[in-house]
Length: 264
Image (tube, rainbow, N blue to C red; front, side, top):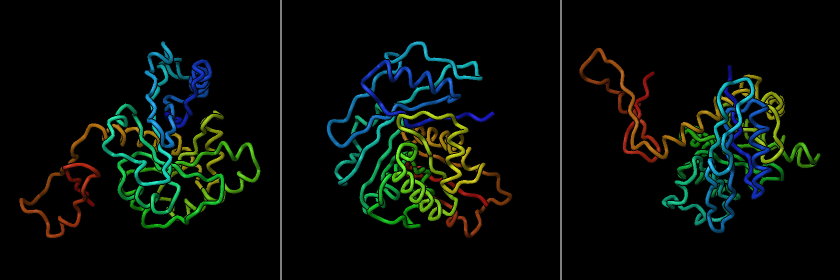
């Protein structure tokens, strides 16, 4: 049975509304949600402790366990100084996302910034084109791209931009990345989101993964980013000396002191 997640439930100061959103998500079958705090950039907000927000947490529909609630920070960037990689405030959040507004910042987010999610504002004409090199670089680093669908539901003009930009992203990725079609406020069931993913150029399997295994990889990436200093994968070798091309299969792990050996 698939484990569905919604990693973009926008924070609201109305506690009762936020509780209602979490309860609705549990009823729709989402096992994990992330409360999204958007930083544009002013003072970095402090996340509300989950125990203060709701206790006990509602039980997920069809499962016997309570929903898991995470905190996420999204940084809307119009300048490189808006992202501060050493800021201790970032560590208060479980997930870290950036929304670049220029091509230069998009390239930096794909290739340099130690984040989990790159948000794409697809509701209007983008000021740059997606290029394969930075997109593939983000994929290799374990990042995912997020496409929000809520504007496409409300407005026909934004719907055209949303579908066109999402399809453009998928063509650039050549199917190597699966965007997360998650909503900021308008909660939809996971299978409704799967159907919308088909409009973005995803196959049925890819659309389902976008709200299940892809989200799970984001959560695992965030946990590794915050806790791991290095990762190594070992295999039994029939020879004491490594093959001559061994060095060509060693790749550095992002922001870590370890190495990852890729065995073909």
